[in-house]
Image (cartoon, rainbow, N blue to C red):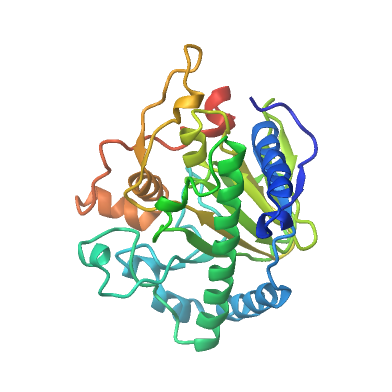
Length: 343
């Protein structure tokens, strides 16, 4: 069970890249303790070359510095698989407020001939790229390297849950793990109140790098804790899928972004499993006091939650062009907000 905390744990995962089984077990235990007690942690020892993040930031700044007309050439609403530019106000979370940010969304860049894409899968397929090879190269490199860090973390979390390190590998063939490039413009009139509405992330966990403060997470007592970036570390927070797989042993991290005056860039990679993966609670976490929750199809959950927060998808729902799967749940159905009755 989660406990109230005022500091976010720091876990060095360097040993997970090595061959020392004992050292790996120690890191796995630390990951499990952080996931149970805090739901969020700083991850160091990840081996990401610093130049990859530096190049990503340079290209991201160049992209967002373009005119709105240029950026809208790759508007996410032109895509059938949720890829492209997200203008300010496009996302609306459960509170109904539009967020003061813009973004560029991408995922695993599959060929247009991919069978799932050809069949109309709403999250799989090719990315919608701007006409800038340097942007594509920098973003693709960062995505690939960070995804592999996520794969290593999944092995650590598997051990933390009492499974073999390869437990999750069969579900990682071509997951719709999304990377977002997010730009929060300078806001000299910012006041001390939430910007992005409170929510959980829908996937297994999120690997976040950001250029400044603003992120806050909710602890078990319902208090908001600052999660400002620390040097050369990812912020990793638990998502809905691991909460469901563990039947609440891990709790998805309710979080929000406060308004800040300074310009800020944020780069979350939402680490998911394959679209058609059936997620049900592990038997070891089911008992009389904790009955099994209803299972979900990973991709259907991800798509349903996304469709409820993006305006262009909500319009498609209203026109009958999309339909939510029967298994879909409402926003904020996971995390501390759900446990505590909403905050």
